[in-house]
Image (cartoon, rainbow, N blue to C red; front, side, top):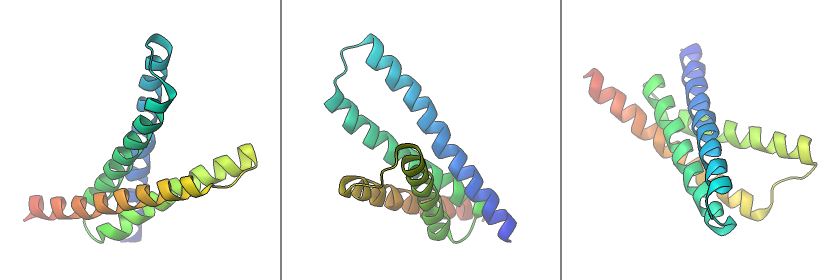
Length: 126
């Protein structure tokens, strides 16, 4: 049982980082070849991040098939922990208040995605 939950979390994290990687590539190309401004980029990355974490929670919930709120929360917390480690070890700085608020929203998005994923998986199995 624990192995299937970890596998579901792994799928969720891979989904989140895959979406982030593709979105980063697209946004960098848009920055290079268009007149996209930094204020637009800030809101765009926030929306893409929320969508990515919702999708990661959804995939984790679909794969886990039970306790979606826990799977979603662990997906969001794992992402936040990874970003905190990257920022702290790479740049020697912690989270600002704005980043804490953003990551709180990311956690909620992943949690909701996990709940929806479990409910979608139980409907397809019934």
